[in-house]
Length: 68
Image 1 (tube, rainbow, N blue to C red):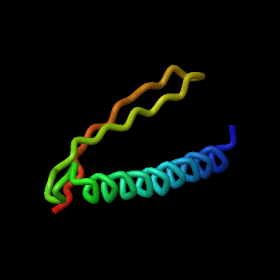
Image 2 (image 1 turned 180 degrees about the horizontal axis):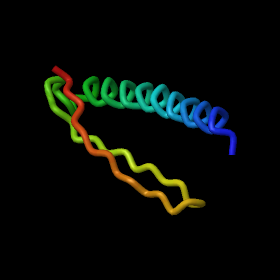
Image 3 (image 1 turned 90 degrees about the vertical axis):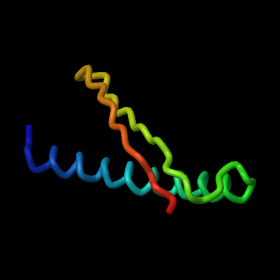
Image 4 (image 1 turned 45 degrees about the vertical axis):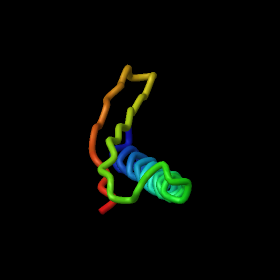
């Protein structure tokens, strides 16, 4: 295994996850505020599940997203 290639590949994947996740969260939160489902001052529970089947990895990451 080439450690540099492996490391760069992980970083590329995580960057894609971060950018895509932020875009989707922003879109859904703004949509929910516009529809009245959210007021805009909430703290939202968030969870990410990371799975890599080939190495039997499944980990959950919990957090909060504050709107105000």
